[in-house]
Length: 291
Image (cartoon, rainbow, N blue to C red; front, side):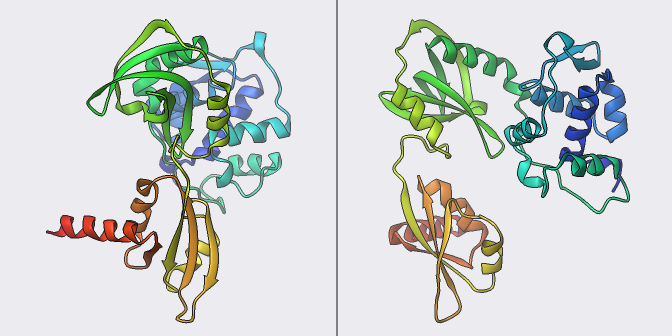
């Protein structure tokens, strides 16, 4: 494997171990070593900085010794989960990670780059929102070409994108950070609602404030193996095999838009059985597109 296609898990673990060994790293040298641009290294370090006490100065980075701590194996595993790459690795043993780092072109492993949103464009916005959340300050912004007044509760990273969870007009909603413009932090404050915090913490989707719905889907026998190997549909559960060889799968979702893009990718092998109006809506959208 060429250095140009260095893996995220490899690069992250390597940088982390070297920093934890008290090395001072040059960002340009790291970029050259991994065959990536300086911006990619800065992005990696920005993600690490959320969880590690880094000191960055004039192109070099190290751990802040005044706040230095050694992570245990368990803590390192939790850090990997927070970063969101734990499912890329079949084994969280630190020895396995070190071997993964050492092996380059002759490695038995190849992990394609993990897709996620480049959050550097709204780094300053995240800092302002973080302050507003902690201080319980009301915010104003424009979102989807509409002026909004929001009580901000939490920043959420979900499937490669950052969202703001907040209450607007007494309704809990989520907002893509990349779509928020003209942000103003108001000097007005709001009273925190513990029930809202609990709802956000217990919800694993970004469709906040919506009611969950069970959707029944027919999956062709030609593609069922993919669905047996991993979770492709949200909260999917294989129900039964039918006489014609097709399978019934149940998916629990919050909103039509959470499921429809996935169904489109698998046409003609997936069909929504219930609710029927969702299948009718999907077919209508496709006909409109083709016309």
